Image (cartoon, rainbow, N blue to C red; front, side, top):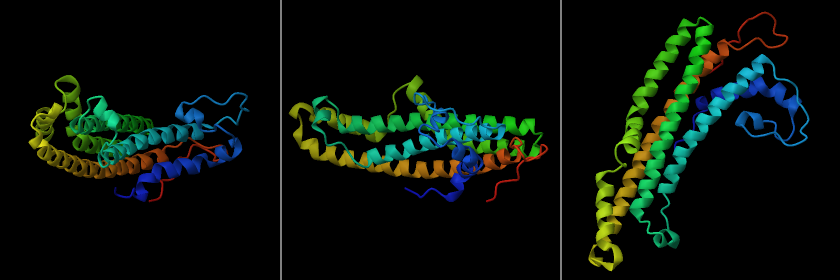
Length: 254
C-alpha cells in the first residue's frame, strides 16, 4: 500500500496544534471520548470549557477522523482479499471462495459510498464557513473540490447503488467461479476442481489489483480535499482568547 503523504495530515496537525493547550489542561482518562461519541468515565472530573476556537477545531478533527477511519477500512478490504480463507467453518456453512470474494467486494463498495458521503459532509461544512466569511476564493475552491469528488467516486457510488437497489454485484469472473463451484459441488465433476482453483486465483488477483489501484486514487483524493479544506478553515478560525479583535488565523503552511 502506498505510504500516506505528509500533506494528508495537514488538517490533523493543525487541529492538534490548536487543541494542544486544551489537551494539556484536560489530560485525564477519556479526554477525547466526546469527540468520538463515547460516554465519559464515571466520576470523571470536569475539565476546562473549550473556547469557541477549540470547539471549532474539535469539530473538524472529528470530521477528519471519520474520513480517515473509512479510508482505512478500504485498505483493510484489500488485506482481507490478499489472505484467503482457510477455516473449515466456511466450508461447514456452505461458503465458497466465490462467496468470500463477493462479500469483501460488496463491503468495499459500501464503505466507498460511506467515504463519499463523509467527504461531501466535510465539504458542505467548509462551504458554510466560507459563505459566512464572504470568502469567494474559498467558495470557488470548495466547488472545485466537490467536482473532483464527484468525478472520482461517481462510478463507485453508481455500482453500490445498483448492488443495493437493482441486483447483487456481479462480474464475469465471479459468475464463472460460481458456475465451477456448482459443478464441482458434492463430489460432482471432480475433474473441474483444478479449473475452479485456477479461476479462484484469477478472480483474487483481479480484485487485489483493482482495489490497490482504487485505494491509491482515493488516498490522493482525500489528500487533495484535506489540503483545500484546511486552508479555508484556517482563514476563518474563531478568535482565540487573548488574540484580540476578530482577526482570522493565517493560512496553514504547506
